[in-house]
Image (cartoon, rainbow, N blue to C red):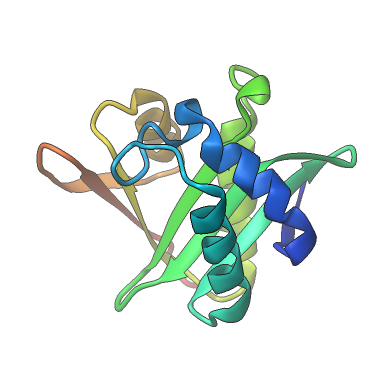
Length: 149
């Protein structure tokens, strides 16, 4: 599995993921993304120095997306996996590989925000050492600090 910085050629892949209500069910308002909105987000990710989007590849097939956004005190992570790959343990690998990539970039303090109903993501993040810091009816915020060697 490898992560590759997003390029314009990945736009249709993101458009298709964003249009799938299963993928966006726990993102923002839970509604699918329009083609225009997905395209805008890809463009922003390619232009911003605070946002990094990585396409997840395995055997020359796009599996999903790993995202990182620099916040004031930590880097917020997120990930999407194409539904045809759900239930195969790949989301866990995406998070592992994404954290490795961020550590190589010097990002050690991480944060993730998860909808309370997204139990699969909560479990994956907790297995990677994330700890719940706060919760309201719409979001659980988890953090992970990696000691520097």
